[in-house]
Amino acid sequence: MTLHRTFCALATAAALSIATAPAFAAETPQPPRQAWSFSGPFGKYDQAQLQRGFKVYKEVCSSCHAMSLVSFRNLAEPGGLGYSAGQAQAIATGYQIKDGPNDSGDMFERPGRLADRFPSPFPNDNAARAANGGTVPPDFSVLAKARTYERGFPTFVFDIFTQYQEQGPDYIHALLMGYEEAPQGFALPEGAHYNKYFPGHAIAMPPPISDGQVTYEDGSPETIDQYGKDISAFMMWAAEPHMIQRKRLGLQVMLFLLLLTGLLYFTKKKVWSSVEGHA
Image: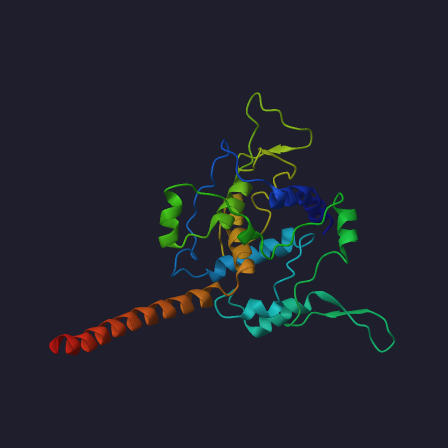
């Protein structure tokens, strides 16, 4: 836990600077586009990948970063991580939730319930600032949707038809993979690290994860690349846990509109054919 808090404290300044960073500079390469199972109008989440990403979140990130818009019951919802209600409840029970006041007017802690949201690792923002150099660690709930960038013409035109919306996961994965030695002549500030995908390239966060840091029981590669893909996919789910239902509803609406268009067309032909016959 101490190691995790130390890592998260170092990561906080960088994470916040990501949230407030300006648009990508011209010399900053665009993150490589990854193949995500949830991309496109028919995409869906890979439950095994989401569970691995959740494991990375619990073991590496959750000591400092909250996920306050996600409830434990979301873990058992269709189209999500694939946990049963019992499994989600077991996960919730592992967290202590501050509640109250009780009959005596005192606040108390109790095991989590399915209706509870993931608790913050800090009791309040002041405590978070005190533990993280004066800044509050960003919430993971919507970070994958907030991280976006312009892909330029004519790429964005094709994105409209392919429903490309994976800028955030692409960027998060690229950032984790983008650490390297600063090129000769680059003025790297003291205490900063060079990352080719970070705007300005100087990032306060050291490489946040290393090969073999998190153990996978399913035999998946325990590499930075795999960790980056898994946590990015999980953060996308956290930002939009009902994406599969939205896509399903959108498809149903499109099919209905196509059917309605056909019915209206043939109705128009039928009505005007009789009018034209009496002209």
